[in-house]
Amino acid sequence: MSIALLDPSASEFEPRYALAINGSSLGGGLEVARSISEKFNLRIRANSFNFKNLDYSVDIGNTGTLDLSGNARMLETDLSLEFLPFKKASFKLVGGLGYFFNALGSVNALYAQPVNFGQITITPDQFGTADLKLDYSGLSPYLGLGFGRAVPKNRVGLSVELGTFYLSEPDLIIDATKMLSPLADQAPSIELNISDYRWYPFLNLKLAVKI
Image 1: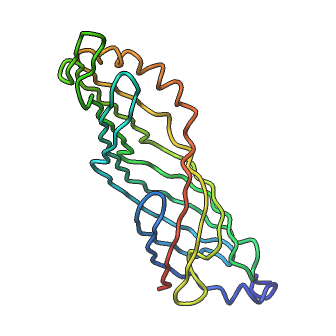
Image 2: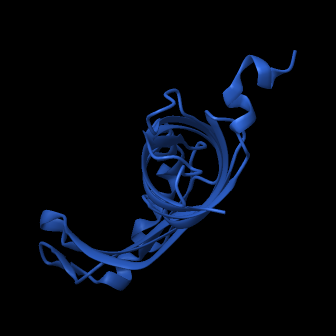
Image 3: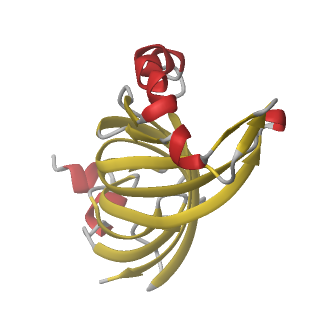
């Protein structure tokens, strides 16, 4: 006896594809999805962002003001499986594996003006500069939940998803010059202190079109 005779709904299922655009905490991106059953959709997705020259200043009291300039960029792609436990609802659970390419953040620090220590004045050039580079590139498991199907029932569908990536262990490099050069020796201990901060929150809004 065939599966279709045992379950009439089985003969009604037809695999479909969908294309989507994402706006998320990983920037903007694209997604291709395929329905593989009534309750499961397979998705492949890519997201990226690139922020440059994020400038700000930090007042460190009697030792002056630090001028900081930051940059951050990330390219991420993932393969995930979407499970819809309820036939008449769009609630979903998602699990998958992502890879972060060039998940880099950097900060350049230098003193904004001369600093006086009693009768001694130290100029920004004498202090030197410090460049910090943080790299989270690598494989990252993903778990999430949300509402809205990767392959919508109608022609067009909206969805929202909240989840988290567990990033690879970070790699920290500090290049420092002149009076700030001792900071470079602190890179291993700082890297150890931040090694547990690897959960990357993911909030995604998506517009999908079934094809």
